[in-house]
Length: 458
Ligand code: GLA
Image (tube, rainbow, N blue to C red):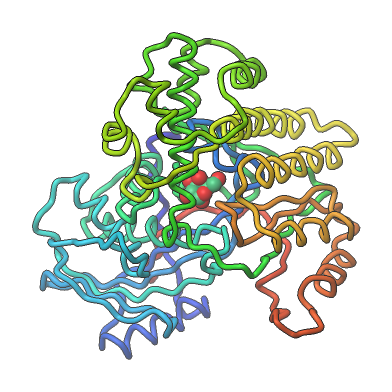
């Protein structure tokens, strides 16, 4: 499986309304016909939030919504990008001088991340130009990974233009790394599931080395996505990177406390691996080693025996150098407990006890609580939405993705689905002040979709 590359499928474009529309729009934009199309899906993370960048396994599934790009390689060295959504302006640049502006997460920069990742992997400096028309239907800034889907799609577009081959695992690793050009220090979950997803199954994703295991979700339940309609773009603020840095600092302090060599430790899983103890034992070590009161930079420097300058320039990311408060105890507690919940979730899915939907729901509820109270990555609207979902029939409900807005995912017994959708719709979306559009894309049942693909016209 590891060496498998993304599938290439021949299709009759005329039989696929979305492809056909894209082909026509491409023609009116560029005056030519696309050579091929690429799609890469978004994802919903069922459980395992903010732990991929700490080295721990996560459990997402791909959703049906995706980014689709129509492509025509051209003989010039110019990259021309257009989007079917008029909110995203056209962009063009030399294909061999890619500059990614970290200060503003503009849409085309995500495309450039994917392109640059592939270009650098092969060490190329004479990439041919291309015309691309992008069409996405993943709600942006909603925790469903629209940005990674664009990075992955662009990576696969570039690979296809080059006529080269890479496995899905290699592509996922390249795209996870190259998305960091945007400035966020994300983990590898979103890119991995976008490439490695398979229809009909959720995946346990493990890192270092990257690998996946199918997880069969219960047949008696449905996963429902509900958008809080609070937009959160993780690249537009430093919140996301602050959490990554808090985990990094917690890992260093824990390692130091246990007399391990701490200076090359970056992730919380490394401390566990070095100590060779269980996640439950790591929670106890955290309680002994760290205190719940927030740490300031001076205290961290004292603990590690380093200067403020070293902390800023050698440990922190550029956009977290002026942070004054780090909550190390809470973040480490979340990570180790969430990592354990992922493993419990997978075990329950395998053993399929009679009350499995209830047990899975409880784990999802605990995950939300930990995200809200220990990781502080929820927001009042998401908390309210999760409460509504639970009251109206979900066995469990939690925020999904980076948080601070975006979507909740709920596990709902299949027979309760129609009533659940109608009632959540009324309770959250039909507000008396009319401030939320009761649109279908804000509340929908989803099932595990397939991964990234290349389409060629038959
Ligand atoms: C974002 C990142 C992922 C992951 C999630 C939180 O989606 O891109 O790598 O960290 O947030 O679980």
